[in-house]
Image (cartoon, rainbow, N blue to C red):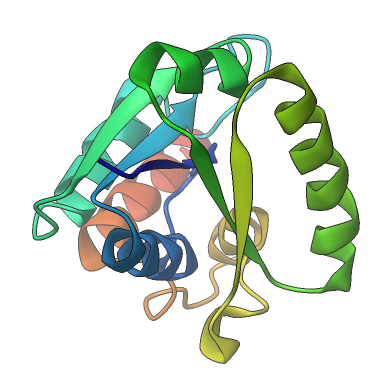
Length: 161
């Protein structure tokens, strides 16, 4: 069985993330969306909230599951028998960073990184931009699933109020 992980912080999950996950699901028998859990980093959504949103987002993909992980991604891969990491690339600048990470990961364990170019309609999209635009009242409705937009709007209202 060919297993892959699509890792990230997903704070919040975007349509760009989901595009990469859907495409990975067509390439691999099983895909795990690996949600990075780092207690030292400040996030808009908790790990459990991000896992819940992603679980809802991939519910129609039978070969995709969602799991949190802390520590090294390579350890997560070893524990689950995963031999491929799928990363979306938006621009050349992503490649510079991701290539270094891929080489480090393969030096730590038997894992390959598969780079998937982001679909053009999502090439500008980043969770940090979604949060920033939404914070200042911009319309991000076409950038995230509806249920993520609902949670994002509510969370930002909590913080503002």
